[in-house]
Length: 315
Image 1 (tube, rainbow, N blue to C red):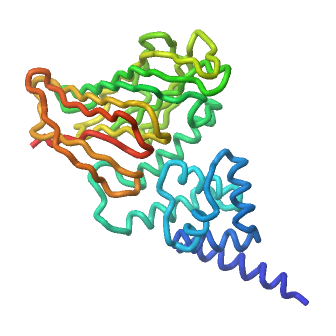
Image 2: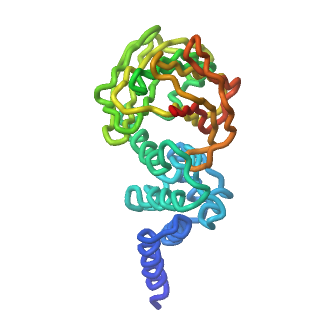
Image 3: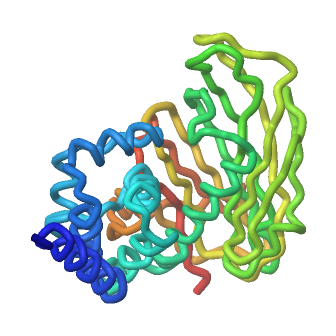
């Protein structure tokens, strides 16, 4: 007579145990089971959060055959915590622990955990600014110039952006700056250089993430293009050894140029890519440093979702 109640109690107990000790896929499976939701319903709930994930992917995630890694997948995991009525960060924490335990050896630079934390902070800051992830704009071209100072620190960066609206009424762009570890985002200056002005600015001290609204003096109609320039002046952290750019969406050309101070030149430079923050780095390629111009660059004719960057060695 009490079989249903006993099953529910057992499912809840299994979920509590799994959330405490993991691993991620067991906790996800237990949460879905405890809520009695078929995967098609989970997918439907995710779509209401603006997140697209296939039933096959959800199935793989709860079997442990694959782990969420892409930016869109990390957004899905955060949405799942709400849909499945789980404590904040419970699944994300298990996911980060699983990635840090797994090989290959973590790449140098930011840890996966720090990137996951920054991802969560970024989502909250964008929510504060009532900004969707793509803001109604597709990037056609993005030229970014990064300056490294005499103390080997990230002095700042300037962006020349060309975008196309894919819906009517877009009148702003939200720029994201992720300073080096130890930076002080509250001391970072946002400068609107051409065809825009600075709106609201939000930051998070521990992760070094800063977001800034750049307001256009026009409302774009779907299909219209727009060109604007802006910059972040930083210089608040210690020695920098790489610059990384993440792309949530494919498309558009990206060019990155890193310029070094005269008395602080690296001995080697290279480019790299990552499928996601959790994936190992690949596509490493040595890049020549122009002695005359003290700079190094890369060009991606058409970006793919994931991460691309330039790293350098000081000695």
